[in-house]
Length: 226
Picture 1 (cartoon, rainbow, N blue to C red):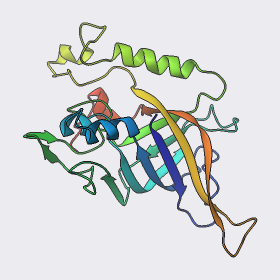
Picture 2 (cartoon, helix red, strand yellow; picture 1 turned 120 degrees about the horizontal axis):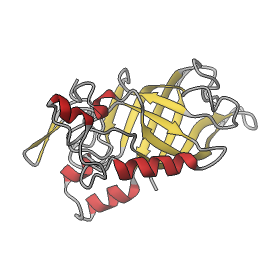
Picture 3 (cartoon, rainbow, N blue to C red; picture 1 turned 90 degrees about the horizontal axis):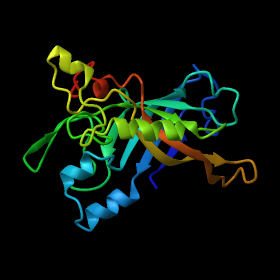
Picture 4 (tube, rainbow, N blue to C red; picture 1 turned 120 degrees about the vertical axis):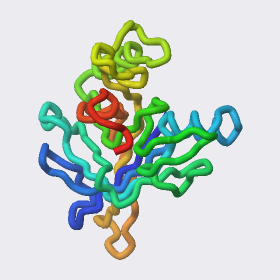
């Protein structure tokens, strides 16, 4: 399963994730997609497929905040991460390792437009919503059903609403897209050994990494390459 590690950057609050909406801060994020990485290494997929289906990355100084208000009373909150103002955001595998995700790249004669491609060859995004499904699992079912309806290769609907405006919509969605990701919080625990503090990796949950409702590129409201 894909996994991610979050490390809060703000001084004095390394062990504290955002607690309420508006309690935003900066975070370093490592995202690893092990099965996709292995498929690339074994030659089971080409690089074009790899980079358009949630490739592994590292990002520094990403904006993170609690998403919405419904989860503020739970031990685990929903979060939103926004990469537009990140100091760096780079691929970590393949021929583009170390290269910025926010730049266009040529792969096998095709242009990989800037931003992160979750499962789309033409449209990238730069913000995600992390849903914890703490109280119950309907969010997982909802995301799964949305993926089924919004499958661009085998869609269950015959026409996208933007077709009526003469807009090419083969790569655009009318619903969210996402998948489960194991999520860890990294911080330095100096409580037991102040002179040589230990790095702690706290498992905070199996989140759904979803397209944010403000990911306008995926829904056809703005160009992915901006």
